[in-house]
Length: 516
Ligand code: NAD
Image (tube, rainbow, N blue to C red; front, top):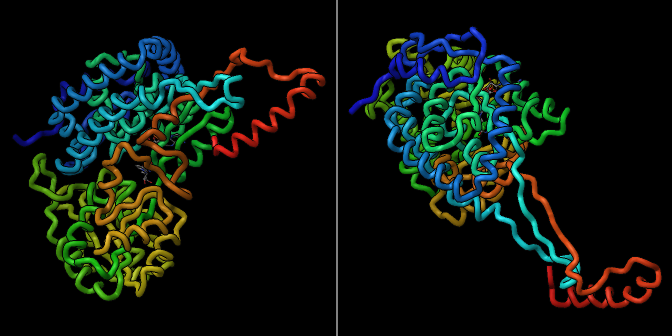
């Protein structure tokens, strides 16, 4: 059964879930057709403050209900996400213009994240004994307390999965959430959120607000006890500055200019076939998407020929079924940016191996998957993120040259290495400055590994989502230690005189047995 754009009556229902008291709204348009989808209600800064106060009140009950309750609710929500997957995929396609396959991936990763934190939160966060400073004399335990209300700010490109990457561990740890949705992704978030509310998450515990990025984004940062931001590096810096004024901690998941290295011991045809998906999924509007390929000379010709042929053969269009490989760009500003990068590169001498043009015959925001060669440092697309379907292939002589080129960037989010020998590929991977590195895959190996941390080096971000690291962001560690009464610690000069020798012997003994 093919899907369809979301129905008007359901959109109206979802719009009512935005925490908004104002009569204002903002128009949101469908990428596939350019038609108006809805007028999204806009929140005020007072709405954000109010949402945070309500979430804070709900949070103390949610935290008190304990891990086992939260686990039950989240596992129920997981099942509802799966039951409602077709509707969620429809929402994602309606708002982002991605293919059904790539919308399906969002639901898959969202459900994985929900299951993962439902099952693992307790084991990561339960209080544990730690080594006491003075064995037998002191007993030490560490526990974790939720931050309170977590502010989550999300972009439009992966509205459901990127939300759940942050919201679920925040909830699993016992927090409330106030989320600022990007206007273009709000319906997908609200449709996903309904599964959680219906499963038993109190509605006020997870509030969604919308509106102007600066105004509402700032209000969320001001109201939160911890901030999770996903978006561009430029905005991430503003969020970090704002959060610093109240010493509010933040994790920042930002942009990239992700490289792929293709080593000369790989099967070039096979590598090219896998590389294509890594570059053009969601038409390159994905933070971990590959935009630079460095291929070793020995296989460059064969690899490039196959890569270009496979790229040119991608089926593009506005389908609500699985008949297309790539979809549309999401926003007019994206089309402008992609066109500007290609025009600048061509004007400065780059060669277009395939693509390079918009496809207004398919819809207003379609642009062909594009491969460029002879890209030089003076071109905009060489160092700044295109965030679109534009990939530069560069031939290099050695693996070392490829590594140096890959690392010559202000970013360090994701990377890929294709190689015949896994051991050699791993050695190369080890030398790349990036938070995630995929071997013989573009991004999905790391992106799907929800037990492993994900995040950026350099200007690609601060902090990590997923894995233990992803939930430890949302708690404060608290140490509770006390005397056992076996011996009193020295207090007076006379007591130190009596016990200091014994304490030195203790230090020597602890080192001898290599006690931590
Ligand atoms: P953006 O920075 O323009 O917007 C992101 C969100 O921040 C939106 O909700 C926006 O309304 C809000 N915002 C805008 N100004 C704000 C402010 N002053 N304070 C607080 N919030 C504000 O980014 P975008 O164009 O929506 O997304 C694309 C960018 O996001 C790309 O650079 C991409 O690489 C990056 N991204 C990174 C990851 C990651 O995990 N590292 C994932 C997806 C996207």
